[in-house]
Each structure stands twice: as structure tokens, then as C-alpha cells.
Image (cartoon, rainbow, N blue to C red; front, top):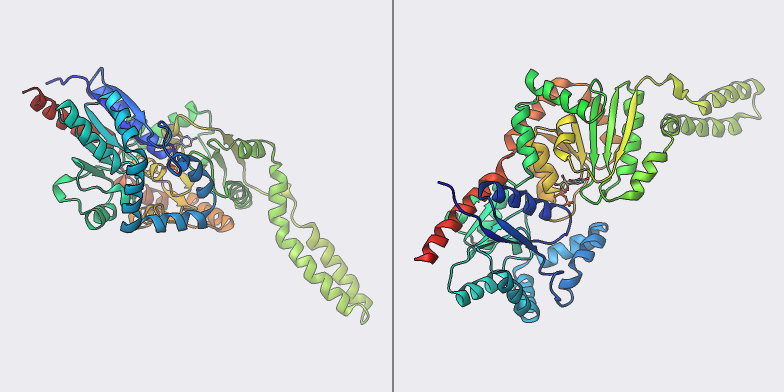
Length: 459
Ligand code: UDP
């Protein structure tokens, strides 16, 4: 039976791109399943006139995520029951009234939190609003972290909680005391594009899968006959993307791997500009000559030690030094590699289908998306705390590796790309972890539960 439209309030905040992306993926599915559905997104820390430090959370996230030690300290200090209680009490005292007012104004049928800082005070406010309007307003948490999560995510009093992995379920039970019957193992909600692409492609290791990949490559205007590496650093384009791209370029060329490196710079305009004007031949020659110049320094040292003994030795060493300093000629290097710098990409699903491997930081959204379309991942960094668990999802799932050093990353990627059997094995393992239809399934479950309650409210 067709069910009517819903009025949904999402609680989220733009700390990183992932939370909003999840909310939008869900909203999209709600509107598809329950036509006419309306929704709003409330950021209780920015949309209301909240007090310090809550009103500075978004800016703090930007500066902290660029500075790992600050992030680590904040994450671990705040990830304790004592802190959580204090923050609760403090933010309750400072902001609860304003939050309640906002919710009252919107008067939703259902509230969905996709943010770790919005599961305690808002739930309290919603229960008050429900009491005032004499109706039930269910509250759901959709955890948008993957391998581990901050303790403030898990409030056992919510109506239901949607989780993406066993490790996070263990935290919800242990830290939050969330009972089994409230937990739904759903996978991370990602945009509908990924479900559509996953359905159209099927298994990327089969002939049909490969044909679909070729088609998408052509649509994106990327050479379909070369390997494609997708490099990204979350919505903000963070991490050592610049040196990773340099190393990838140099190593792929010197090993003769024909490839296109697509670099998603996200909102990092400066990186995009740098890549657009970079002289790639110089990058290769620097990489080739770093060994040559080291050798020439050693030779020069030898030269001065032996100079007085024999002119013949000196002449020989001279010649060796000159040869070493010259290094190999860039023109001799066999590989044919292109770099395509991209800004903020809207059709990420297509790029992930087109690519053979992804090189990325450990963002939960990005990892879930790659898994959904069977794309192996080289994880290059993670924020201390909640992103560490995401690395384990990739390693335990067997669909990638973790490495921080740009040169080693490049060497390993070059190996992967020359071993199609290995790529196929990793791709199958990624698919086993992926949940391309998670958003639809969550929206359906929340929508049906809410409709049941609305029926009850009417009676
Ligand atoms: N993203 C995008 N276009 C870009 C860069 C990123 O659509 O140019 C999306 C990406 O697909 C993912 C999200 O931004 O859905 C990043 O989320 P993630 O959880 O990986 O990292 P965060 O940025 O939240 O730390």
C-alpha cells in the first residue's frame, strides 16, 4: 500500500562532508518512497544562536582536522563518560530552550540525527515537544561513522539506531548500553547514484561489469584503455595529496604503466591550481635524479680524498660524477601518464566506477562508497580517533592497504595495477563489505515505523 508524505527533521552539521551527504541520501530516498515528503536540516550548533563553544564547532573542526595532535587530544578527552555528561549538562543549560523552540516551529513527524553531537539534548527537546503537541515523534540515529565512533553517538533512549559495522555495534552496546532490539545493521547511507551504478555494473570483475566501466570512462572523457587512479582527500581535499600525486606520476611512468590520475581536490582550490600548472617532466626528472644526485655527492667526496694520489683516478671519478649527475633522460621514460585535476565532483559514483583503484584518507563516506562499487582502496591517512576504525574496515575486509609514505604508496599502487588478478580479488572483497542500497532500506524502515506511529496518534 502507498503511504503518505512525511515531514522530516534531520539533525546534522557541516563538520566534514559526510554527515550532510548521508542526510541528503536519506532525504532523497524518503521522497522517492513517500512522494511529497518535505524535510529540513537543522544544525543546532550554527542555525540557532547557540553559546560558545557550540557555535564554533564547525570552524574548530576545520582547524583541528588539519592538526592531528589537537584532534587526537580533543577526541580522546571528549570520548569519556565524564566529559559527555558535563557537555550534556552544559549544553543543556546553555541551549536546550533554543533547540526546543526550533523543533517546535518545524513540528516534524519524525527526527533523524546523523551527527555524533546531536543525540542527547535534542532527544530531550523532542520528547518535550511531543508532550506539548500530544503526539509521538520518533527519534532515530543513523551513525555515519564506520569502524569506530565517539561515545556521544549512542543514546539507548532513541527509538532505533542504524549501524554500519560489527565493531561499531560493539561500541553501541558497550558504551551506550543500546539494546539489541533497537539496533539495525544497515550499512552506511550513501547517495542513490551508487545504488544505480552498482546495479548497472554488477560485479566489476565480469565482462558485463568491465563493459559498463568502459562506457562510463567514455562518458567522462577519460581514455578507456589506460588504468585510472582516483586520488581524493574528503570534501576539503586534505592530506598530502600533492606529493602523493607526484610520486604516483613518477613511479607509474618509470615502470611503464599507462595511466590517468584523476585528482579530486574537493574544495581545495589551491591544490587544483597547483596541479594544473605543474611541470610533470620536472617531477619525473627530480624523482630519477634524486638517486643520481646522491651518487654524485658520494663520488665528489671520494674525489677529494683521492685527488692528490692519482690523476688517473681523478679523471675516472670526474667522468663518473658527470654521468651520475646527468641521470636518466626523462624522454627515455616509457609510461604514458596523464593527470586530471578536478574540483568538487558531483558525479562521484561515476568516477569510482571508472577507476581501478582509489587513493584516499579514511573518510567513512568515501570508504562506504568505494566498497559499494567494488573499488579497492589505498588509505593514506586518518584522523586520530573515529577514523582509525575505518582503516580496519578496509584491512580486515581485505580490499586495500594502509600506507602514509607517498613513495611507498606509489610503488604499491604500481604493483596493484600490474596485477589484474589481485585487483579482481580485492574488488570482490570490497563488494562483500558494500551496501549500495543502505539509504533506501533505512528510509523504508524509518518511514514505515513513523507511519505506524502516526496511525496510532490519530486514534
Ligand atoms: N565528495 C564529493 N565530491 C568531492 C569530494 C568529496 O561528492 O569532490 C563526497 C564524497 O563522495 C563523500 C564525502 O564527500 O560522500 C566525504 O565524506 P567522508 O566521510 O569520506 O569524509 P569527510 O569529508 O566527511 O571527512
